[in-house]
Image: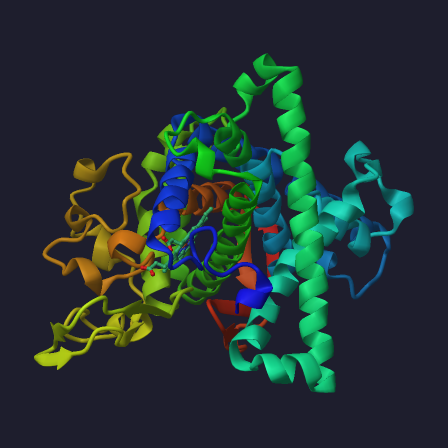
Length: 443
Ligand code: HEM
């Protein structure tokens, strides 16, 4: 796996304790500042407005095409292939929060869905658009391609024709990603040198890493910064986008949950405000329960691993050092010892028992306080211990913001209620398809 140049670096794939500790500390500090969290909310609001613009434009062009079979003529429902849109949406947000640079993935995807002639929005003319989208596509190819480096040994990768081509393709793609990130880092360094005042308003991860006065500053060279940025992309956008797909699938199959969610969202938005704020998010306790319950039923990370550092006792057995333990989160989430009727989708199992005032403004789904009398590790959405997901608060803010904006604006249904969830599991469980139809709830 070293051949990929990712392992032993950054955070996620790093098993060198000393460098992992510094990288994780810097990453966590950067993404837990108030400035970063407010920026995350602001960028989600902006990106959602952009998304609505594209959907409106596509739905209007369907209407005006006068096609009698048009989806949009069906009681104002508009059909959407949700999966690519949500991936582009989350990658645009991660890009701007990690690097301070726009990825324009949604704009690029809109161009593919629509003819270039009908483009009205000026950002579509940006010459960097295709290049930026290529970067996000490259990240997706890298995530998918990692499996080749995990299951085929170097001999097969270098000599077996089909496998060799695939491995080379992933490596070329990796080179492109590294170069793009290196260029962005160089450019930002120049900006900092030329105009340090201008950067005061920037809250992205890259600017933080370049300007922080950490005692280990010497060890944070450009390669380290690149690996931390890459982690934000690798761990950040596919996780939240898949979970949002699962949330939609489950609420559509449970209309009473959907209605209760609409009621909560309607009750927390002041009438004159159509964007989310930190205060609004802190009130969305039922939406938070939906995120927990969906993660219980369909965890994005179904399995994790730990290696015993020393000889240890687990479940009454003695295990030698270096034993690899596979932690089966998906199975823990269905264990009847911890969950009553585990096969029933029921966000109320958290909501009713919560004393939500205690965890006000917390978003800490692992908090023991948030689930009455519950074993802390019976719900393992973000892992646990010292390698617990450092992006969990940001992930919760992103998902709650999207839910609030999306479901305040649109009613939603699945195109095919009979279709089972189509998923594929590697490092994470990915949704492979989700066709939905939407209809405006409020103007
Ligand atoms: C729904 C969204 C997410 C889920 C379900 C999720 C889940 C997880 C899980 C289960 C782990 C492994 C923890 C363990 O082994 O105990 C992890 C690690 C990690 N996550 Fe997340 N994550 C999400 C979003 C994010 C976001 C948005 C970011 C960053 C922007 C992020 C960054 C990371 C990093 C860097 C690690 C590696 C931590 C380490 O090894 O020390 N995650 N995540």
